[in-house]
Image 1 (cartoon, protein in one colour):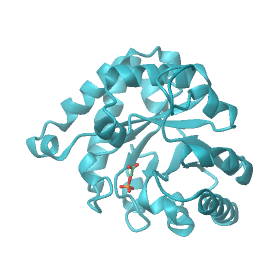
Image 2 (cartoon, rainbow, N blue to C red; image 1 turned 120 degrees about the vertical axis):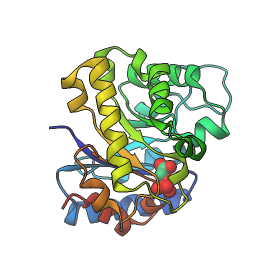
Image 3 (spheres, protein in one colour; image 1 turned 90 degrees about the horizontal axis):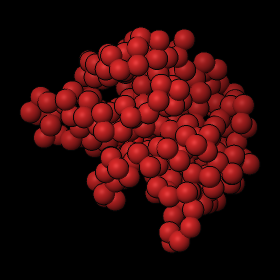
Length: 253
Ligand code: PGA
């Protein structure tokens, strides 16, 4: 059975102190009443990661970064490498988030370098994909996301592809309060699983976790997670409150 995952993407929020408190609170609530079938991940800002790794109980909560550099090391001022992330004890890294693609001009070439480095350093990439509103309105979202796959993760070997987690995040639903309907999420997830099956075969497709992201919250997680092809969520805003996040973690119950 494929893994169910609920990952919190804290984005550019929380001071170090507030982040450590949040990590503590998440660990406590997950320990006390989290669904043991769901892998919980928190992705704080880089500078919090070391402390957050020390704070969480690794058996309950894993830690990830929100990005990593496209270069292994060297004269790249301000960058944080995949190897550095891994050396903190973090195990995941979000790659290809639409905010990075849009605001920091991350194209497929850059993403491929990041994916290769993340995998080479033993990190699990949470690979994000998803269409903007104009594409959804034109009804060409399937082709749009297919192209994202073809330009990036479909270049990976089957062995490496098996290490990925996919997050489908329609851009029009991120931070807008406008969630994809449960049917829209299921439709896209099933299409993506079919694409993966076509490329790597059924076994790979059936074992790839595909998370939904975009205004997923305590109120709608249950309905979204009730879909057979939705294997959890990548959560932004609602991951900044431990109890809201817990309610999403328990969305399968
Ligand atoms: P949101 O963000 O839950 O605040 O919409 C999700 C994401 O961007 O990962």
